[in-house]
Length: 97
Length: 192
Ligand SMILES: [Zn+2]
Image 1 (cartoon, rainbow over the protein chains, first blue to last red):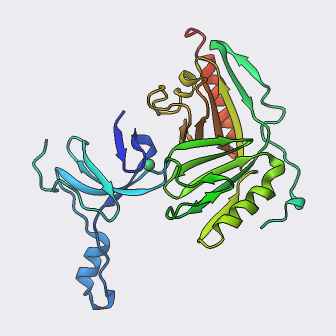
Image 2 (image 1 turned 60 degrees about the vertical axis):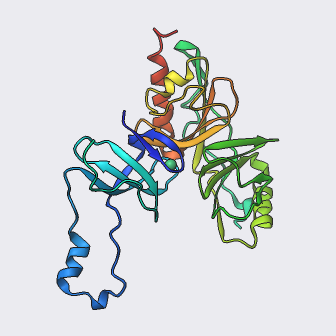
Image 3 (image 1 turned 30 degrees about the vertical axis):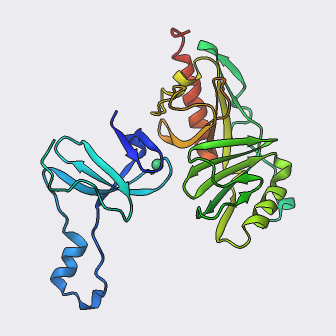
């Protein structure tokens, strides 16, 4: 079974987790100043890379906490996990391992 | 706080259905008697006490003192239990020490049903539906965590070193969880 490294709990089985989509999508400060095109992109358009991707995950059946993770979408390998509001040590453009 | 004198009579969904039974593999599954339980949510921060337990206990650990216990399930979440007669007292003690901090204290006594599974092969039976590593190294005495059992969520508690686990499960899932453990124990027929 794939183990995911929760920042609170350490290595835990993947069935306890849920994925919450792409991480670091910031809501525009003043939505009223954002055009329709940009707003719809903020709402609906997400990256879908073949390789390392920054995602939000929640330890649903554990500590119940959200955190961020870099995951390789090809191998399903977790490169690293880091707390909400934090920055990853590796970059998302890192070559696939 | 809720007026405890108005509590309804407790009827467990397992009453009558779940007789304590010794199963193959030397495993025993039984329902524990009703207890008071509280879900406490408060932002970790300045050291404080809640019902006699320091809030800075390790995440996913349980502390037992007297008849009471406190399991820290996450950075800001505790499950506190004790004798049913102490319910009002526990609530008042938490209120007294956390008065100045935003917090929520919810009685979940009636929501939860406690099961106990014990015996040398108890961990093997649990692992039929619980994906956690239950070896002594990974889940030693004093561990407590929310996790899964088959298709339902449980809080799994191992207070002591003996192979005895407490399963806290929501009452509507309790017949499922109990049946799951009994059936898993029957699968141990050849392991014993
Ligand atoms: Zn966790």
